[in-house]
Length: 98
Image (cartoon, rainbow, N blue to C red; front, side):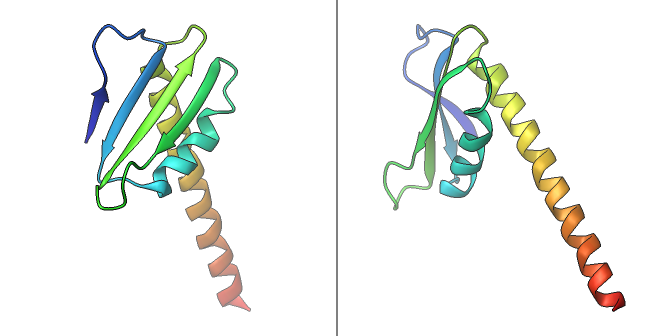
């Protein structure tokens, strides 16, 4: 579940999203991917308190809307995860043959 922190008057290029039931696992991986995009000025996340199951994810861009960057980052992260799983499974099969 995702919600938007702050007021509605914030610029489309500067947003903080709140991910419910997420932690450093998603935050760090997503930050590593999004921070490499050319149009991204700043990307970071925080888990406000260990007892709260939520993560705040901040994106600031030069021109592209932050929501577009977030969607692109999630899709790219999914591709990385799929590739990792496929590579792992093929290596396990190769190992089992020997």
